[in-house]
Length: 185
Image (cartoon, rainbow, N blue to C red):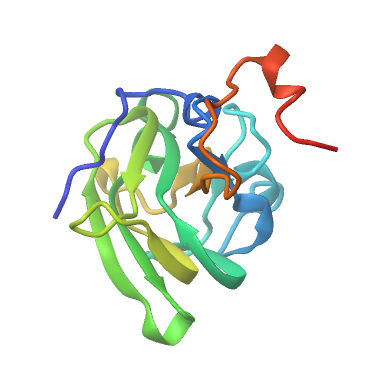
């Protein structure tokens, strides 16, 4: 069992993107849920609004399935949870699994969350800090705070490392003014 890696605690994952070392790839995946209440599904989980959320509607474990069309390199998974707003709906035990399909998923992380508030950064790397290559990620909510039945997840982001340029190593442009000239048209 591992504890989540917070970079720093509650930090907005968009700060990771601004460094130029990772990019969010959730839009390249097909998302599905084990269950959801009407109006509280994948769209709310991915809308970049911390006030909206996915709410499960069934028995545990509650599952978020993220499938890529091709084998994809993933480095970090970011989950936004807020115990003060969601109380018994807040996950307390989460399993992160990867594999080629539903039939060969293997758990790579299990998290114990204690009244989380903010972004939880989960590294999807091996013991040598090498990113995972996978077709599918499954997030399973195994338990909630206060023995709650259904769960709330407010946002989930998935990040892949940005590959170095084959032309040569140039300094990364991280400000908005420089990003305009980031690529040759």
